[in-house]
Length: 348
Image (cartoon, rainbow, N blue to C red; front, side):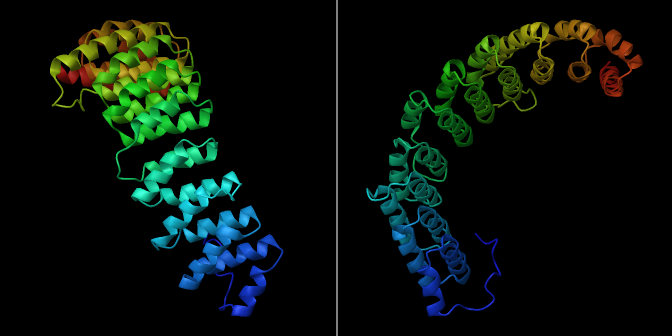
């Protein structure tokens, strides 16, 4: 909105302003909106309010709403709610822009209107309602969100919901996200669900993630699942308040699932993610699998990641295969092997 700043070097007279407002050219009226935002006056708010409600061009109405959202006047919330609820306003993009503007303000009026937008048939209204709810301090509507996630046919809405649940970071989201990870037909929705679970970091989600890892066919989603498991169970970041038996059981289940995947998956970046995750989890049962996989692995990126993981374990059983890599033609593999050897020998 401010990119045209400096376009008007002097104050417009009332007659000049009126001439531009009455122009049949859309660009003239949009220029007025930029000018009004720059002048930042009570007159600006009044004119922008009228434009957002009654200008004959829906694009001008939308830009007027954007301009009005720059002002910190309490009454603009009611105006945006009025625009959204107006039966006379037929353009979905104008209603969506009103929802977007309401979402910038934390209030009960905003929350209630955003909830209404969440149930709207318009994809744009649903999309901006989800974003706006993240800015509200009122309790996040998990039941509403869950219902829409599993009934809405639009993948953008479902992707936005899974992303939003990862931003909220509440344990109430875990079951919803696991269900989406296992049931949604869109790979990007499943990938977002895995990313969201990584943000929440609840060890209770590991079992569902392991099941998803075994059954997922989309490679990028599978990679994200593996990275999420490793991130949740990272031994250096384990939450002390979590019962140790729960953590231990999750580690063992995750190690088994990741070991199975790293040995069988044909995609190198899935195997690489599994190696990284196994190194973070730190279960010694993974060492023989990593050594065996390292000896037969041909991809340099996977070999480097396995070497890093073996270095983290500091187990002397890995030294023979690591030493062979010191003759590797790939500089990154050679350096990773060298670093791992140094880590292991320093602990002996």
